[in-house]
Amino acid sequence: MFKRWQNLGEILPDYLEKFVEDFGKKEEVLLEIEEFAKENKVPILLPSAASFLRFLVSLLRPKRVLEIGTGIGYSTLNIYYAYPEAEIITVDSNKKRALIAKEFFKKAGAKVELLEKDAFDVIRDFLSQGKTFDLIFIDSVKAEYPFFNYKVQALLSDGGVAVFDNVLFRGYVAGREFDKRYRRTVELLKLFLSQVKEYPAVKNYLFPVGDGLLVVLK
Image 1 (tube, one colour):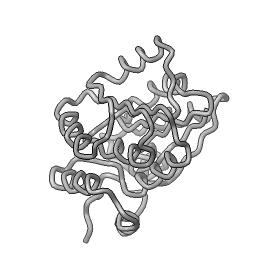
Image 2 (tube, helix red, strand yellow):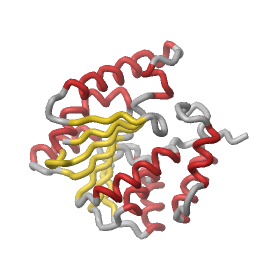
Image 3 (cartoon, one colour):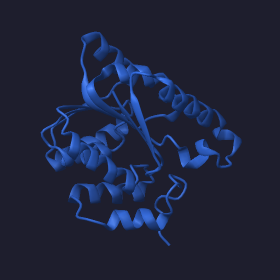
Image 4 (cartoon, helix red, strand yellow):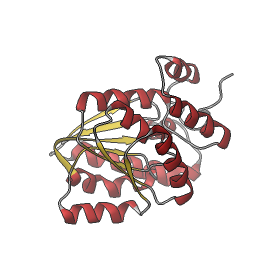
């Protein structure tokens, strides 16, 4: 039985994620990252979410992209391959994983700027500099999403799109029973979703893809 996504994202059954993963051609570097993630138990974007992200980037053709939460570079390279002309800045304070991501970027020949800094500091600096982005992808600590919310929206260009990953958190946010150790994360994700829903300056769309994707359109 295919167990790669067990306890990582349980919204779509494993057999559907496996079917999505096997559909279509994938770049060699991405296959290598998937194997590395499997062997080292590193969480990466689920296949259905990766396909959705690539589709969205292909449609948007964003000039400037900001990613919060590089990990080992899997989602970054999915964005890059979907639209190589984009200027991509990705942020992660985990230096060990950032080093791995850099190696994969090098193998892919991808021009990506990786900032090994705290995301809040980077966002603050970009806001003070008046920088904006056409696409912002967020896949970081879920409990921090409510605190990213308005700052991320302020960084979006007019017509820009923000995508938040894991917003349904294994279905717990939607009412699935969960262990009490996840209570704070679930409560903060619910707070985040309620904030976005009530904010009048954006349109938002919630998709049960991967572990739950929220798409915010400014």
